[in-house]
Length: 203
Image (cartoon, rainbow, N blue to C red; front, side, top):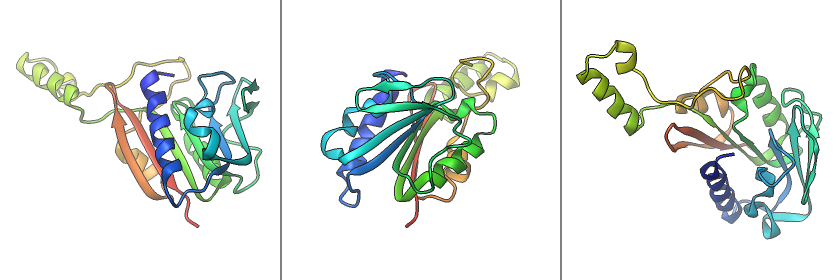
């Protein structure tokens, strides 16, 4: 995971923990987790007072499993989670949805196992009207390059081929990814952009 991406999760999880209306987490789930130090479950923001005594941290990965530190990663499919309804009060998912052909099924499962009042935080590669993209389009126009370049935008290259299916806009996050959640926030960082979104399940 890119360091800047990890830092962003550290920041926003820390902000959630500091909210007066957020109790220490009793159960945290990471979709697409890996059983090593790079996992979001290993974030410093998810240690100590952020967690309820006896809290459980678990990850799900389609091909990997194992334990690291104070969390475990189970082999499983995000589209068919084995957990009961309302099992987790924080779910994080970084750079995973773009690799799931029917990602909406995974989102439905995340929302199913999220507790009322719990938070879902997601990030993926995306695209948008970032400043660098606007400058590139302006240059393409001056040079008389094809319309496709003039109207294009910057996005992350294909990775983990052939299992890289999607790029998302902030509009997709608001209207599709976080649909049905409350207190929704969507933003982007970096170039090419990484789109972030978070929302809370209604009580």
